Image (cartoon, rainbow, N blue to C red; front, side):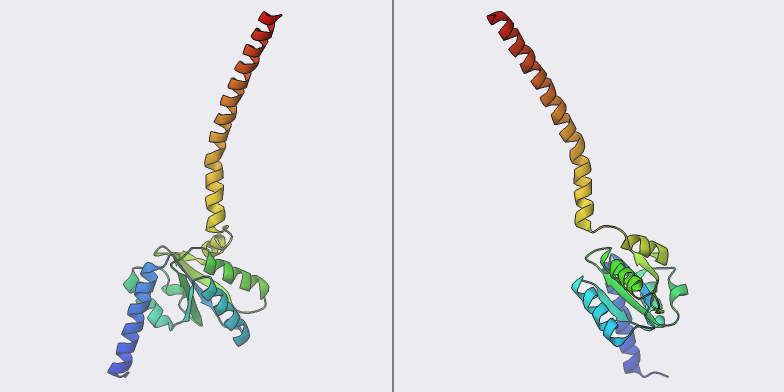
Length: 178
């Protein structure tokens, strides 16, 4: 039977995870077995630089933290070696880093299990689709370009009408002067 001190530490850890999951935009569960210490250190550095938290947590503690955070549907993925990366800064960073790692190391057991997006559980396929999205800046530029297109077209039509009017007036003026 665990001591009161250990139980209190675990409750504190669950509480901290719960608050982090509530604030996070995205979280990705991975099976981290088969990764060397060197590659794990490199992966952690990439995630940290991208503004993501990466932790190896016991499955029972993760389950309780998900339950407290209101994220249902991930208990089935909590078996074996489990680590989680989460971020409150963006949606695509952690999925992209893990997708790149899996692509670069196909012969390991390292794999994305599942995750959550804005508090809702998603499967590994959804996380993979998220990893394929362009960065936020590119998406914003695409949306603004889409909004700018019709305005630019309207300006071209208006300038064409004005150009036609000027040409017609110029032709009339030349005709009268001749």
